[in-house]
Image (cartoon, rainbow, N blue to C red; front, top):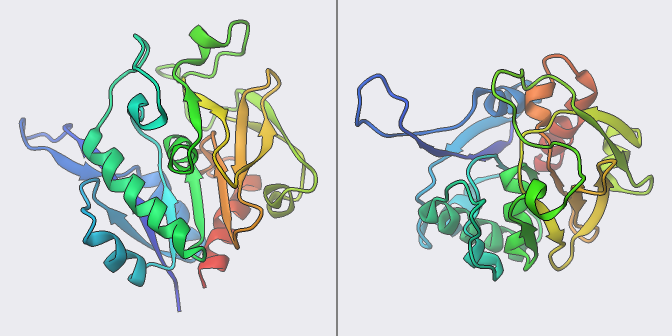
Length: 241
């Protein structure tokens, strides 16, 4: 039986009918899960506490997706001038879901970009609000308008004894990049397992969890041209079985 994988959605106002807001998720996430053998289920970014246990009782796995910045108040900081925009409703919706999922200790989780940062904050970690402003002389990690998301921007080096290295069967990869924030201090139970050449954290995982892997880059956008990233999604779906 194909496992149900919940994919966190976001708010969208790009509908042709102006003033008609949507809940949506990038097709690349959905197609990656489907291709890997899972049944993708889009989760709206407005779930309430009563919804979390109902969802987790039904889901076999969870994919935390990218999107807007997380409110700095959630990791003990005041917002600087670099925060590009937040969605408190989505923050609360996903934070509660993730924290309950982690308490249950079994649900496989793959976190990507914003999801990677959210996982860290949910476990008590914090973030650099803007890499360029707070970490001078680092690489340019931010999204460049017009640059295809499949394009590889920099390398990442994985710890050889990490779960992600075992899944991908390697320790050095070229990846894309579309973020201006990054993990500063890792949350409780998380191990930093990958860095960019400038020292920016690119992946974390929970060694004591059956499957909880978190990456800053966008493997779902790379897979059309980089088959080396498919194992992340195969591994999530396999763990969800």
